[in-house]
Image (cartoon, rainbow, N blue to C red; front, side, top):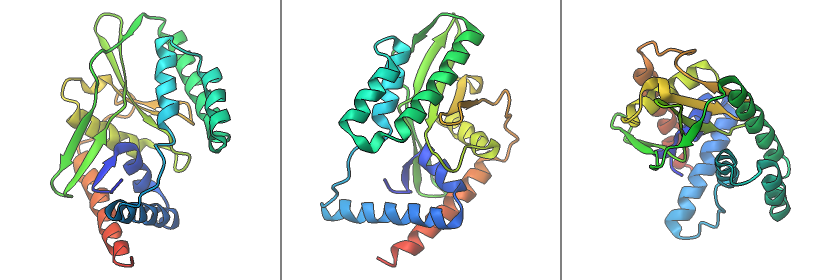
Length: 221
C-alpha cells in the first residue's frame, strides 16, 4: 500500500489517528514500499480479507460465520483476538438489520468496486470488496467495511467516506450507500449523517496533509 494508492478504510483510519500512531502507520507504509521496490516484500495477505469474505458468504447462506471464524483462528493464531470481535460485531449488526427490515434480499451479481482519482493529491482511492445487496424490488445496499480498532469511525469520517463512495460508484444512489464500523456494530448513511457541501475540500485537505507527512518521513529512509 502507498498513501497515493490506498483503500478508503485505511485512508479514513490515517486521517483521524493521533500524531504518534499516525506516524507509526506511515512509517510502516514507507518500509513496505521500500521492500516492494527492492523485491523483498515478504508481507502476508490482508488480515481482514478472509474474515470479510466469510461474512459475505454467511449472508449468502453458504457458511456459518462463527464456525468459520473458529477455523480461521485455528489456522492462524494471530487472528485469535480480533476475529471473535469482528464476528460478534458483524453478526449483531446483521441480525438486527434483518429483524428490522424483514424483507427478501439478493446479492447484486456484478462486482461492485471503484478506484477514484484525486488529481489534487495525485492519489487514487480504492473502494473495493463491497457487500452489495438488493432488498425488495428496488432498494440497493452497498456496504463498505471499516475494520479498524482505533480510531472508531465518527460522523465527519463517515460523511467524507460516503461522499467519495458516491463520487466513485456512479451506478448507485447516495441513499444506497453505507459504511459499516464492524467492531462498533454501527452503519452510517446520509439519511442520518447528511452531506453539507464541503466534503471534497475536507477530504482533499486531509489527504494532501497525509501525503506531505509521508513524503517528509520518506526522506529519513
